[in-house]
Amino acid sequence: MALTLSQRILRFNFDPTWFAHPARLASFGESSEWGSDSLPNLGTASTALRDFGLTGRWCFNFDWAPSRLSLLSSHELDGVLAQLALLALPEFRTLVVRREDREWIRAMPAASYEGAAGVGDVFREHGEFKPASGVLRDVRLAMRRHGAALWLALGRELGDAGLARMRLMLEPALEVPTISLPETHCSLLHHGFVSSVNPQHHGEWSWLR
View 1 (cartoon, helix red, strand yellow):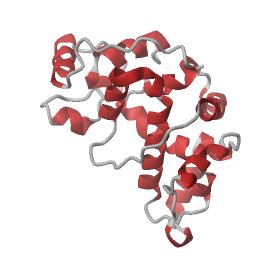
View 2 (view 1 turned 60 degrees about the horizontal axis):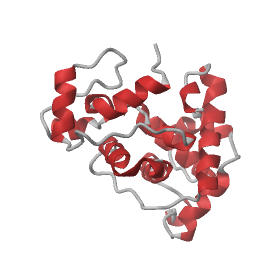
View 3 (view 1 turned 180 degrees about the vertical axis):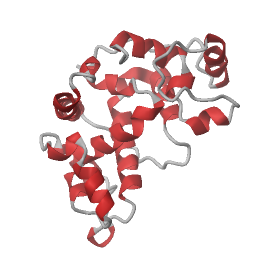
View 4 (view 1 turned 45 degrees about the horizontal axis):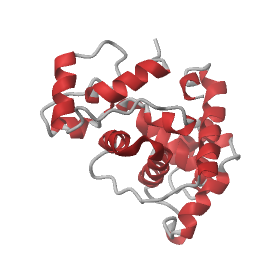
């Protein structure tokens, strides 16, 4: 059964084995639950909190809806990052070389949603979006990078404790651009994601609203 908002908040605060990237856990000799909804091993979770310096640093206020996109398990994150990038930068639909990448993009719920396209102007203004000669040879990496920048911007209200957890969820080698989004852009992006995924997934993302 899918986790509720309150259950996700508890996992976000107390169980790094649920949300941290496997490579981060491996560096401390921990293993990942890979998004398992079963009850965590409390001893292992407590040890991971201590190892990552998160003990006593909590983040329970998720009243600002865009910040709820931080409440992801490790296995959910990559797909969400790609969709955020696609919502912000619809050019990804055409700047692709390989057919399998085009088909991968077309299969995403965000591929048919246009409402949040203007968010990508933030990247262009800072010179962060420069597709070489009109194509992207590693589109999946580019989408993870730009999606991660957007995702971290949506979590800005969570403070140091929340952002520390979010960074643990990203693969260590991923180079993420630093951007700041106005509140209106954050709300547009959040609304675009919720609007695109909910109709196709029968409300499993309802905790985001």
